Length: 211
Image (cartoon, rainbow, N blue to C red):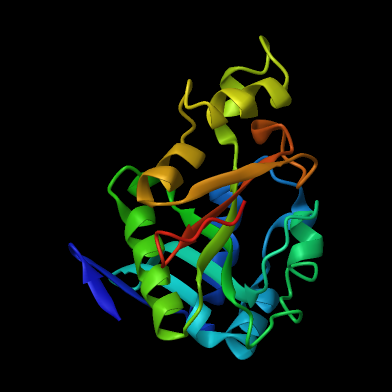
């Protein structure tokens, strides 16, 4: 557990699961329903990999949730549901070399305060304690909705890779330390991000180059 300003970051407990389920719908209103994490799935995450699950609390209110599992790196095309065992994470590998970041959900009323960045840093320290190589995640290309009438998602992703545009999620993750590997198209179902995400990694060893 640690503090971030007036907020507390700590491992998720079963009592937080119901609030987390509600938070999913608030943060991801256009995401396919089967890709929203449920109360029962959150409870299973705690059983499977307790140290990889986090909440940020404002008093007793959950204002942010984070879900991870351990996995070995693969650059193969995959979907959100394939990577996460349909969100149950029973495919968690206890000796996986990387922490796979499944989700960071910050309530809209608490965004732009650095909470997401604090959670990513907390996760990186957890990865260090577990002797992982760092974090892997797929950042949703949420800014695509603002460009969808003038370009296709492939063009948007290339502009992101070339650092010619900023994305509210991917650019924030890059600022934390994540490095882009490649886009994953048809990763999930959400028109806001063009159904895509950016496969990224944040190594503990800054000299480590995956690709």
